[in-house]
Figure 1 (spheres, rainbow over the protein chains, first blue to last red):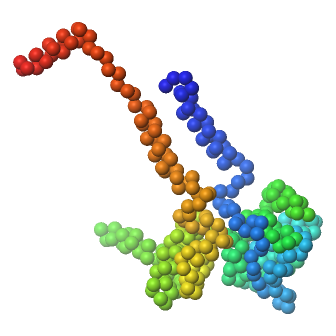
Figure 2 (figure 1 turned 45 degrees about the vertical axis):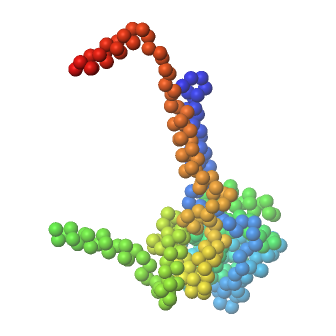
Figure 3 (figure 1 turned 180 degrees about the vertical axis):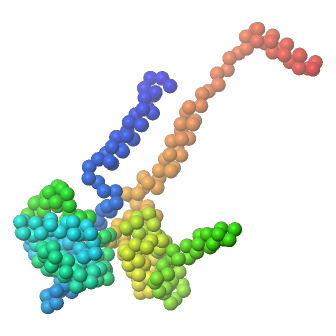
Length: 178
Length: 150
């Protein structure tokens, strides 16, 4: 052990520490799985409306020429409650159209949920067996997808939009498309 | 002893109930076996380190249903895997496929082995052969002579 060679173990340890520090820092969530649908067209689907008499929704309806958000929610989902204020704000203050998809929920309960907390959605449909959610690669509610004017999926927000994730994550992505 | 036996019964009972008893198996035993084998390979996306066969999560149950459905429709295991990978990415497979992204991962045991072998062979010091001095030669001779006498 002479010369520079004696520093090799130290260098390895420092490199490992730097890697750990990097993985700890930032707002990386180790449970989050990167969506494979990014920059791809929205999966084909057709879902009936939550409210009777309203039209059903297909992937073609998401091609509006403007960015649009799709939010998977459920009345039984507690984090959905937590992010609801932010959805209301997005819809009313920012004027972003949001589509709500009720995931594996009793329609009456979904309606009750929206009556209680307010309805931020321009259209609400129901995915009772959760198959559309699987097609979208949803692992749990809430999840929110940002779709551009051509119906291409641009961003997936995993988990509730709470804390600074509206300002720091979702809004910058939205601004980029607008 | 009795209590111990009861505990033992529970221990061995659990794996039986761990398998999806709440769902209807496929009528065709060959297809059911194929579906079961697939379920062991598919990662539960909620609990993440369990297969969907082991998991009680709601999504795992839905995915089991889906696997059975695809198999019943005549999908091969490759088709079913591709179906899920299209939606959830390679992560959904408990055993990652070998591709450009995972090459380093698969090669890492061999890389480490090579590294260790390299370290072992380069760190072994070469024995330096010193010729014996005149005094040492005499001592050696003395020792050997003593050995013969003993």
